[in-house]
Image (cartoon, rainbow, N blue to C red; front, side):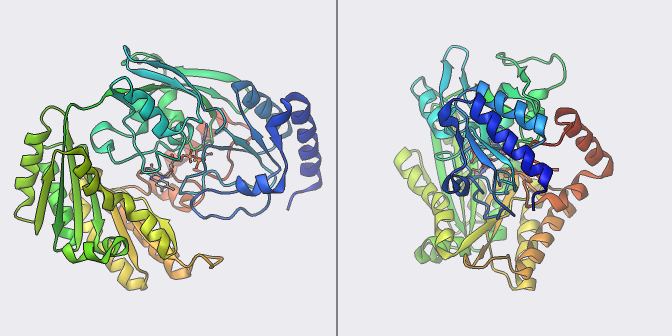
Length: 458
Ligand SMILES: Cc1cc2nc3c(=O)[nH]c(=O)nc-3n(C[C@H](O)[C@H](O)[C@H](O)COP(=O)(O)OP(=O)(O)OC[C@H]3O[C@@H](n4cnc5c(N)ncnc54)[C@H](O)[C@@H]3O)c2cc1C
């Protein structure tokens, strides 16, 4: 429930925004508010947001933040709303700052292999534009056709290729961002190297809209690899597939991607796939040595797998990867998938898989598992009845045990989706009291009035 002073501040803010923003930027239409209320995590906001600002330029962001800061109204930055942790969920009475309309590629410099983009650029659009110059934007979240660069940076998104090319942070050279009080700051650089001052670019990357609003990014591009080779192997058990993936790491082979799909997911995609094995591991090697690396991977898999298929043909490779790409849509046909996102040391992957199965059995909660195996990032997925208002208690308990398992194995609560709303209650345990307190103090330095995406991340 909002209080009387909050209602006065809200009314004043709406008046100031209507006065200072161009006419098409502000919306209080209930349908627009509803469309901006949550993300793909399925988390439900407690009340209704105050308004949506559709930013088209940095000045719109500075105006919105300056007034919201003065009146202490919470602001929720938003890209495409594909987040899976509730990060863009609009709190009651908040101002949603929709960055998706700031979607221009401002510069694409093929010589220095970089791009300068606004935050609302769709990830795949940047990759396509870079492709015209023989380059690519390496981070490739499975949501690349929908998600924005700003959202990717705010969540430090991962993707299939991050096993070799790193997460989003490894491709961000510099940022323009607006602080809570409306001050514009520029961080980072255009050079490949550079260590002047604290690394604010790295700090803002992954800060989930709680420290500043990103209004432009200078991003590293990389040459498209000269060759790729792809393998798909089926296994009699998920643990064997996890062991095979660790064998690749141990042998010193660095694949561009290694994706693991368990039997229940294969069955959800197509029962015929499940008949081929209890788990599928798809591995792609790239670069001049792709064929030799793929041959080495095939040799490592042979004693563990039931079948191994290899191709250097891009269309066939796409067909081998199709099962991984179809996994989430297949689970969405069964119900509402709640996607967890733990990461464990790669040496503990098979152990994590075994324990997740035991947790699933103990709570009688079916858990479907996908993994970015080459970086130890597991997505255990609980599918719930979409008509349910609340998550069943057993599903919460299973999720809690999966988080505890990740920490016990020396891993983390979230490999790529971020903490958002959903994992907040476990953050202090992972960070420990001293690091948690330090992070809270950092938040206060950036946002002393606590208006930026309150209640998320920390
Ligand atoms: C089918 C599907 C597949 C997915 N696959 C992956 C995957 O492989 N890897 C992965 O990492 N994620 C994945 N995701 C999750 C999601 O796509 C990513 O988290 C993505 O980075 C979110 O981008 P977005 O533009 O939708 O951001 P939103 O969901 O709108 O926002 C996410 C967070 O970023 C903040 N934010 C957004 N824009 C800004 C900005 N300009 N400045 C400051 N803060 C901002 C928001 O406040 C929020 O906290 C997937 C999601 C779906 C639905």
